[in-house]
Amino acid sequence: MSNVVGMNEFVGMANGDAYCWLCQKPVSTRALFCHQCGTIQPVRNIDHFARLGLERRIDIDAEALERQYQALSRTLDPQRFLARGLGERGNAAKQLEALNEAYNTLREPLRRGRYWLRLNEKNFKQGIEIDPLVSELRRELIDAAEPSHCDRVAQKAGQALQQSVMSLMQALRGEDWQQANSTLVQIDGVETILDEARERREGLVPERG
Ligand SMILES: [Zn+2]
Image 1 (cartoon, rainbow, N blue to C red):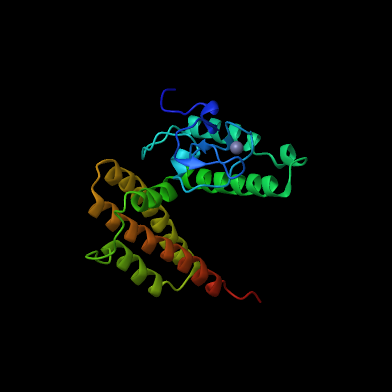
Image 2 (cartoon, rainbow, N blue to C red; image 1 turned 135 degrees about the horizontal axis):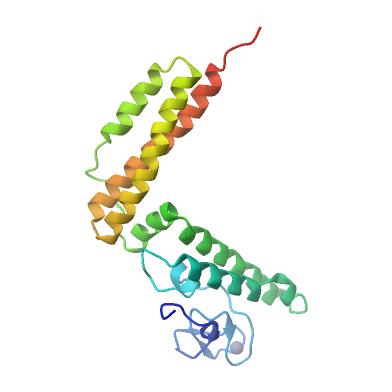
């Protein structure tokens, strides 16, 4: 796996882009530990890919993600820091939190897609029209008089959602930012329909008796 950063990279080799909070020696921003004194470092402002030691790509290698996450979360296991000072325990806890956030964002395609747009500073809402499919589903839902009608709308919305996530990934791969943003607006709309369908269905459950 050439696109994965080895675990030793997380012991800060001196790239000189940050400084150890304790001994003030240079450490890499990605370093969990100082190369000089071995102290765990505070969470630094790096992107989720860097945090997991993965190459920055929209299509990630799920196995590599899993492997990196497992190894890093073992390294950051709070049990390993029990004998350390309060500052280090705090850093370890925050590092683990940041790792979990990175992992949860990257493993799920829709979250990764949203994050990818933000990371590339290509997220915008201007000039995007309401998706006709979303309007159609909303009309159908307003007319729904029985739970089964709501289920049908929810089913259509669910299918549309799956389709949209695939379109989103395709647009992101092709760096078609306009298309990606339109697709995200559609996804937001479809997700809202799904919630509304659930709510409306609950309101329509027939009274027994
Ligand atoms: Zn140090």
